[in-house]
Image 1 (cartoon, rainbow, N blue to C red):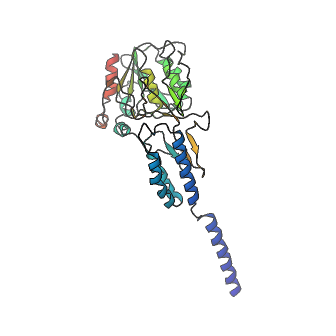
Image 2: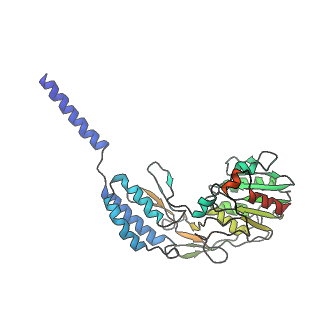
Image 3: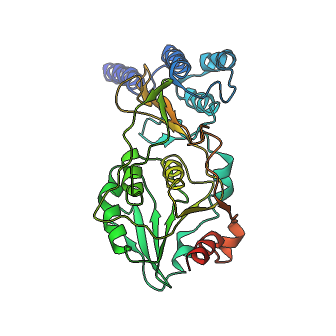
Length: 340
């Protein structure tokens, strides 16, 4: 009996040590410090807005180094979040271990307008169902008095490259068109080109693009498709319009017959490229954690960046959450009145 107890004790001891080795691993403080050093250097080397935003990145190093040293294991994540939030950039994020993206900062204009728009209120202005594309990146239809409407909900992948031509063909004979770019985040320049190219009748230069401080040559936007839509266009924007949505708005503003209505956009002018490791916004830290920090930026046509500044409407029409709760979309109504 005594030998059996000793055997059980030995087995339990082995199991305890094995479990401790497999589950309760000691925190790797050195990895956290390596990640911190790599992140700080990456931002210092590539981030384009440190001077523009008057961020003292050297001082921030001295503030956060002790916090990283004190962090144990996953305690590093809140420090990482707060450190990246210092950039006050809606394009900056990190990936969790589960693969989700965490954005530590959103512009104030986003918070002001995120509930000042509702697709359900928009749909109440139509007498028939809107057409939703297969990717669900866009929906479109025709309002009373033959006014076209298209909502761009996503500039990612190549959805608009493939689906916008179908929508514009459907809306071809409308008397005017509303392009709704409210509540949008980022995406690709290819999708912006797919939209803008259907409204230009001659080549149009892109806003200037810089990576790592160098001006990047770009080919002009060319007219595309079997026809160019030349009737009046109203573009709807608000504080939640962001990144590629802002770029699309800024370019459309240059086209005769286009009027931008709503409120100033969020101000996300940062850009990243998949061309090289240096210009790629995604960056892997020594531990394998992934962060994303812009390495370039777009300017507006007036030479100002639209990071923080945003794109201002031609006609400012403010809208609140109270308007939406009352079932009214004043910005959409204004656009309809312009095109009647």
